[in-house]
Image (cartoon, rainbow, N blue to C red):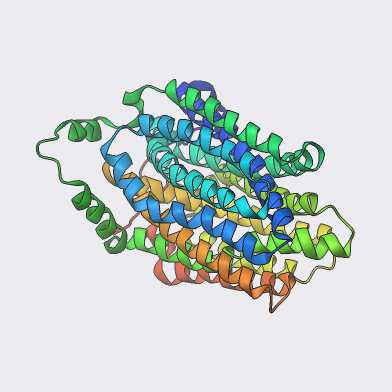
Length: 433
């Protein structure tokens, strides 16, 4: 099976263009919101590390806890309707941040963050389950890479623009931009036909309501599959272990950029934090964009497993080295290199994973995996915030990189290259049994 190039997929697939366009607009607004809320909390709380940690908990854990329910929900109901409803609900929530003006109403920022996270879980579950249906098998690698590369590129652009806008126009402008971005996203999703979001077999199964299992039964089926399927369990284990180290990234960038390097080099805190997120986003986006050519090379030589574990280990080592750098610029360079490697790896890993999942259960498995990862990510973020009273952000960076690299060891122990054999038409197949 020949994989479509990025240009071919975008030029020939209007439905995917609309989905991608909706994500681009919403993600750009979300990063304006992220930098603005982080700066607002830093200003109001007097740069409290625990206040920042609480924000990350509110941003991550509700998404994680809602994910199993969201996954089952989007496998049972209209994925298109779920995405539109989630976008419209987030318009009003995004504007609630305008009410945060003092420490007494800081709780509004936390509550609004929780609500954005909850609705985001349903949107992401529906989007991830829909993407393979819109792209088809031949466009899945290109579609996956584009979905995630644009997300990470917008991390870079949105962080940079968000930091600039916050310092020039104030935080309120970012909140309004975020709200408007959800409106545009909802319109673009509305333009995608309902029938394009599912395959025929799943649509037929949904229509047979009399013989359909209950909500809880289907949720249990998803959990059972995630823990009994060898490939799905490997992905779950690997992502959870990565998140133990990766969860510290939020605090590392906030403390390292906004406090440590901002004080050491007399930089604006918002712009220093944005610089790190920009380096991370550009690295991830660039890695995603070269994944297509990398995958062709791996197909020819059947080296998917070796590539995945080696890349995971190297990305962690490079991130740990960043903790030894004396300047923000050098720190950013190693962050970029680390994220470049993980970007390539993730696009290939995620494509293999999505190809292995049946459409009728894809929403559940994707959200269970993402929920478990984010649960650990959120816990790790809060622990990292507490550790800032004991160690420096640079020491935390070294620890984070070493732990993240262990995800590659998990993959090495559970998979070999023989598990990923090209099919008779030349595409990568999986053997998840």
